[in-house]
Length: 578
Image (cartoon, rainbow, N blue to C red; front, side, top):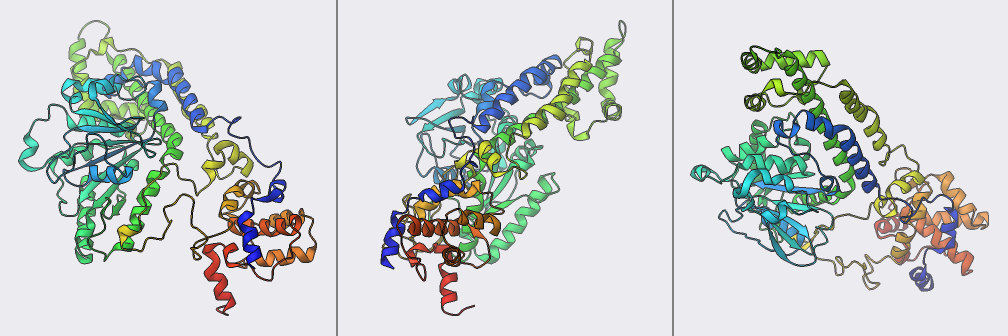
């Protein structure tokens, strides 16, 4: 048995698995363009060709206070913005996520973060002033110039080398004030800046302190500024380890009630509960719950880079719908204006009757109410322009926008992974590393000791467990990683190879039928008639050992060859448990 354990530790994947999946692998990374880059390139082309000319013609940048998009904004990393009142743990959460301090960091019970801070990956630690950030050619912050020097002096970048920041950009916001402090003039429009970042963020994290659930006027204004981005919002009830289970239940209910009154979305907001910093829990009553909640949140963060292309498509579709609706509004207002006399009077009448104007346009062009701008803000904007100077509606431009929504973008969506794709097409679209569920694009912290659990030695070691740790060591772990591609190429359904596919793979080895029967009995550990990834690795190892090393098939698998997740099942069978 020890001989088999040694054999397993030297198994490199073998040639059998490679031959069984030959001809089914997709193009490698050298010949396949990164799918996200491809989507970004085509989105830029669609925007410049069909959308940008219409935006310029009907002054989208003025009416929506959103500058025209540049190439940098299409190429930027996913952005995560943190919003909350002062001392709720925003900066501490970022520090926990990065696993270290960062330049310009200020943490304390008082309002310490007095500026918007963008955390960027870079070779050296340094802070970058806001004025320099806003003109940097490789960063998507040029649009912030419109908020003036007063804001830019309270905007800075924090650059540091970080594996997390290689994949995402974090945005720390000033603590939102409450009570008398709200009357302090920030020197810029806080909610407008939050709205600007929200439009470009991939994820918005709203943090609440378990001891401070009141939603101040300024916080309500910031939440109102997030309207239209509800799908991006995740809420965190932080410092929940400082109250007991009964209090937590009441606080959680009170927070949901407050959010229900503040957020206009009919759906209940997703609220993660826990203590999101590096310190151990003060109260272990809810340790298991907090651990699961933290894992769920970290999973949301880890998959952001994979969803980046979908998010960019989603944001462009929303923008195109707004541009199309604005075109109809401006075109209609232009059409209603008299050619010579009474222009000012007619303009004022149209502004006063704007609700009926919107209803007329909506019915005439079959538009959705959700695509129209905020009527009060739009009305204020209209007072500062002359309708007679508006551009007339061009049907060919509207046709191009419709083509974007009905032809170009749906065609682009076909480039993204779909459940209808065959394994070969999936590999071509995503590449081996991205379809492997064990590979996270963003390394996130996972600490058992924080939740009052014993820390497994080498649990955080990227090279896994050593042979001396009998409970967790698996001799075939390296082989499992090598064989993942060949397993996926066989087209598993729900993570399992159907019996017919697994049978064909084993038959191709050329072994006798009786030998294959024994190998199947040893490999199909849970006796469900299917082979999952780990069972497939065991089967390939046994076939390779019999064919290449001329080893006899063992009566039972040594413990080190059995996947750790299946050892309890195997032991239960041996002891007659079922």
